[in-house]
Amino acid sequence: MFEICSYHDCTGCSACASICPFKAIHMQADEWGFKHPAIDMSLCVECGACKKVCPALQKPTRKQRLNEEAFYAAYHKDEEIRMQSSSGGAFTALAETTLQSGGAVCAAAFDEHCQNVRHILIEDAKDLHKLRTSKYTQSDMGSCFAEVKKRLNQGDKILFVGTPCQVSGLHLFLKKEYPTLTTADIVCHGVPSPRIFQDYISWLQNKHKNRVSCYNFRDKRWSWFHFNMKAGFEDGSTYYGTWEADPFYRGFLNDYFLRECCYSCQYSKHLRYADITLSDFWGYSSKGGGFRDDDKGISMCMCNTEKGLSLFRQACEHLVFCTRPREMSLSNGAFSPRLQNLDDRTAFLQHYNTNGFANCIPTHFKPLPITGRTKLLYQYGRNSLRLKCFDFIQWAKSTVRASLPYRGLRFIKRKIFK
Image (cartoon, rainbow, N blue to C red):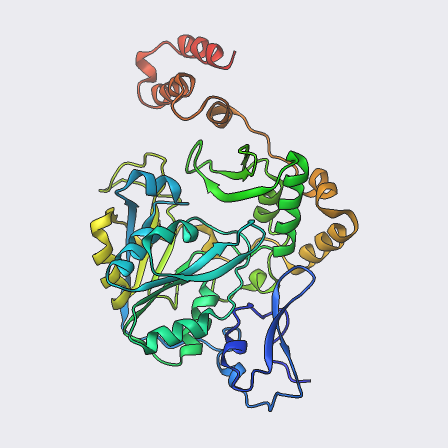
């Protein structure tokens, strides 16, 4: 039996199915919804084309690499776009710049009922909302690689955004550098099971007795740093789940149900194959220059090639930005492989198969305790007087404690939490 790469190493990027000259490969979902190549041996001649484009076996060669990456912190000038984005809205700025020059953007979008995620190609800025925000489940690539190549051969400008393995798969599939293609990858935590996400959506619908019409993994109702999940239902009602309590997010952060290759990901490193790398700027500080962190979202933009730096500079007309030190910019923990391993994953999935999503909540998806400032934030909102008083007390303790009676501070704190 011909095998492209190890089952556990397969990223599901679909480059093999897209490149096969005999159409002998199609992508087939396993029991957890992860796509793997299925080979029709009656059509396969073992030409090896699929192996040459597999990002689990090969690495693309990129030209015009910068001697040292350029690091920026940025957020979109349009407040509404920034608040609709998972971090600072840098993706939207890059996409707007591409679309304004007559190009197209290819990235992940939800289907109509938020059950699945797939890559689509858009040409109108009105459709950018479909591509905005993080999607914490694996995207189905479909035939987008072939469509991107067709558009590039016509001379069209394309911005392709995906996980590092998807970007590498695209570059290997194309076999050469296209001057009109710019790629951006994300600092990826790993891709969760599509089946478990579908079970989670079904659980939400059963709990709220209504159908989900829209979903956002990274809503900023309370905060960018303390973000929440938001599900809208057809009857107009809304579910807000904090990352400390939402069951799907608890499992995601605990690395229970990622794709197999994510536990030993060879792309979770600082060397990137995309022109630009995007992420939340966790660990951002304005020390030594920079703008104030107002908790509305900041993007980390790492420009890896001359082409990526050129697009970022063009997009700066839409951005508030500043350069940041390399050490600060690379502090995002998702540059490293996952905490759990395949044995932990296997044990969880066996338990899940027996008990189902709802019955796994008490054991595996237990909420974290919410105390202190976070409790006030969730209960009263980011602009509440109680939260502002709490922040003032913390500031007073750290900077002017000697000038305020400590007993008075304790009295004010008791009043806030009463």
